[in-house]
Length: 207
Image 1: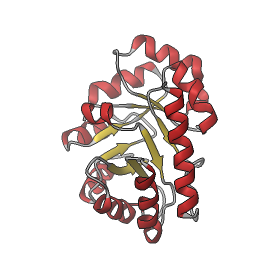
Image 2: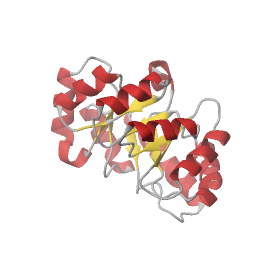
Image 3: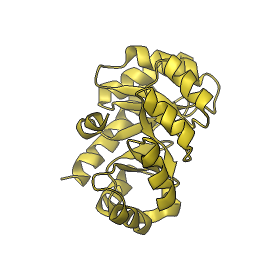
């Protein structure tokens, strides 16, 4: 999984509210644009069905999974649906450990160094810095000074193409992208266009 993180575009599309009827078109748009990490939060109806649809159509180099995964039962359900990405808003070591044991790519949410070290100790592969607006650039820089070198740090919350550069300068190595990318009912062409803007911004930020 660490090799996967190293080799893959580290932009996670957060598809909150994705209806199963729209999952196929959204997947085609996002995979076609070049994104390879798709997350469907579980706190909206139809999430597991959408995950299953996306997992079946995902390219070999892509990983689909669930967000807002709060308990071990969520991990089991997402894995059974074909999901191999675990994203949560919090640091629950039992959830992380179960995901890691199942071979899932685990990116739990953390907002303090204590949570970050607990998450890594439980088997996290990347750390979702959430809420990013609260942690801020200064907080992210502080994380980077104490965490093991090379720890993937993915801010989530309020990220837009024009803000990527400042976050990367502060130490971000990837991002979770929500409402700035996907909103229920968005046309596939517009979704692909938005994804392209984020990918371009990322490529510019890491030059």
